[in-house]
Image: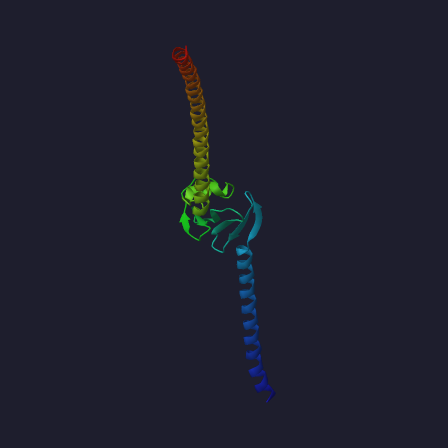
Length: 190
């Protein structure tokens, strides 16, 4: 009986040992893959953050995330088999592959957005244009007001001049009329 137990026990222990060894190898491979795929993060220029990962096949992915740029949220540089691909993502979520020689991990967010063809916020553009148009209208209204005041002064001065002339002529006419009346009265009353 002990021989039978031993014969069953030995293969059972061997199977457990092989199973444990396989798990240890898988755990070691998983740890190696995780080490290779771990991300490193560092602060970037223009209030951004750069994270870098390398997977088990050696593919490198560098992602620069912008915290407060109004046109671009992130740019991703992926290098696979020596081929570099740059993808920009706008604030609205639109993605575009960018063909640029510029170092996008250190360039300003606006330069990257320009290279990707991302336009600024339409609301900001319209507000800026409205403000400029309102200023132009205000300037034109000021010019019209100045011209109106100037013209009104000229009309007022001419009216005063004309009134003086009419008044002077009236006085002269009255004097002449009075002289004629006086001489006519002398003629009538001897």
